[in-house]
Image (tube, rainbow, N blue to C red; front, side, top):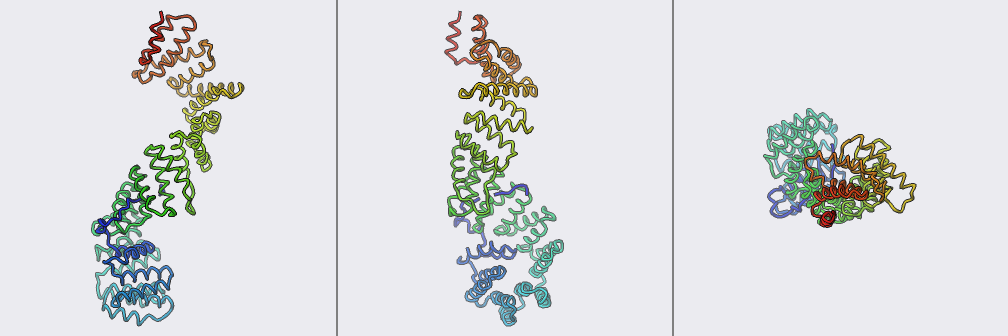
Length: 541
């Protein structure tokens, strides 16, 4: 899996959606494909619904408890099933399964069940499973007899074939298991258990075929929560993100979906770049879940991530503060992205000091990440701490992990140090020398670049101070020669203004007012709204 993730819901549990679910029968389907916790949740969720056959529901709740080793709970559920409907044979099979587990005699219970529905293939295979779960070796002959009976009474019933395929899967004989599951849904084209078990068995061999079978099944049983979910899961596992997101969107409208699937859907929407939808779904979960629920932590994380992508910086800052104030679930940790997204939000929203703290924590988790180092350096620059800003960019350059633009930025930050009034002269001189060094390096790598040449001119101008001795003259003339080649000169207006400002001031200081006036006029061409400049030019004779 190339990405992990971490998904959501719109609180779509309204009465209008009831038609899209199968009630307690969804729980039975989950049980049959060995998803016991999910099955139990759905059976209990729908237990008191008018359409629920309580005897059947209690039988499967008892089987779940039996498989989980909770024998007293299993016995209680089978008893409740008999109390709900003594004519239902399955709870007697459940009691027989308990007796077999305990090494007792189940004959009388099984005879009672068989008398209630005579020569029933499905019941016979439930009896086979009771023997198999107790001890497949000890009861091998009983199991074989059940299979023969089932196929004699109803050769087209799929349950005996599903049982046989299950025994192959237990031995990790995946190829034969898949083939027999396929035979089972050939017998019953709408059999959910056979299709899903086939897809789960065959997915690692041929994911496309497994997905195709589930798509075929969903067309036949569109309201099955299990099928909707399994298809979404298979899309996701096969890195079909867009299809997975669309399928999850359908599935979570089913009242028999699970909260963890809502969480997954949030993330699928995020990875599908549907940031507003992902944020809204995450927010709905945060609002409806118990604050102590661990899923709140992950949904607050997704709120932060989505708001950063939406460039809603102030809201992202607030979401980040709420996320980091939330208790961390046991077994979880903060991730690098938690800090970098929060840092980006803080930096952009005007909280550079807090951004520095966030980026530092990110670097603690991933000290070699060059993007983090850049972010931290830029945050220090936003806080006007150019010493620290240059320190982080210098690390990039010294490690050889830099790009040409990093040299330009480093030169700029060293110029920032040289411009800091509170620093001593030696530190300033050293910073100015380094600023010159790195701008010269990047100028060789990227010759004729407007920004680089302008930076050369800025450094030279800084060196000359208020002397106007022409130290930057060559650089500004070089800048103008580059600018004159540009077709879209208006896009470079600010650079023309820098150059003409310097040249006009230089020649005026030297007493050459005519040349100075020429440059003032050129400056005005690129700064026509500057009335003070216009009045000054008009005053020159």
